[in-house]
Amino acid sequence: MEILNQLPEDHWLNLDGLLAFLAVYEDEGRLQAFQQVLKKLDLREGVVVEAGAGLGRLSRVLLEVLKPRTLYLVEENPLAVRHLHTLFGATPGVRVVQGFIESFQPAEPVDLLVQEFFGPLLYDESLAALERLPFTPREVFPNEGRLTVQVIPLSAFQDPVLTPEVWALFQGALVSDLFDDSVVPYTPQATVLTWSWSGGLQHHEVDLSGLEGEVLRFGVEIRHNGIHLCDPVHCPNWPFVYTPRIGNRFRLSFTYHEGFSETRFRWIKEP
Image 1 (tube, rainbow, N blue to C red):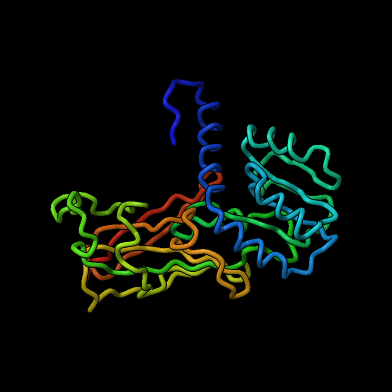
Image 2: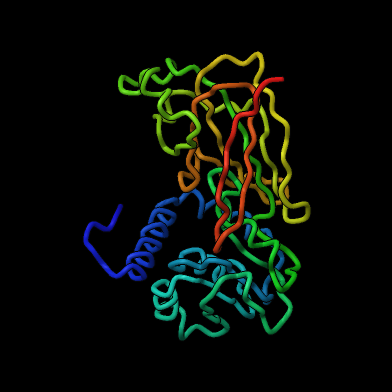
């Protein structure tokens, strides 16, 4: 989905953000998985903050399942905020707040912060914002994630267009949704990154020596208290990411800038 006509830049950016929300809400598996685990949380009549409420689909689940005393819906996109006011403006206990979560200061202690700031490379969207909160929630949902990697021969995808010559042109680029993911089962071979609310981001040294293949496939797994919630197979909101393999060791790094983490990727030369 993309906007094809010329619009004022600010309006184009806000509408483009709405299109991203629509893609998220097509992911019914994600909503169902979240709902099942949220039902197990003992937070009725508590204070809940949803960071990045978007168009309010998860907000409805939070109201129905948790029955919070107060639900703060924090959202930066002004068009989404307008929609949230339309949906929940008359709902008792719901407060719609426009702005970034790292600038939000609630008027009362927060029992639960609900967030979906994971990117397809785990830390490449907005998880860093949780390190800048001006308040400390009693609990965060989901509170764990990890990024894993698999090495695959290019020939296994049987793609007539992505020949070895064409694939080589993508060296150094991390590309999502590139291959037919169903052709090769995802069997992670190493953990690249882990994140938890209590421990933050952790890098893991990965050495691909002994593994055969020209394609790296990265996949993110989202969990809460050890319970599996989502991965690219079951929740397409977080797609697989691919890059050509040109070595055995690599490094991912992230720089937080204006609400998002920018990703850098480099191969480490062999000694």
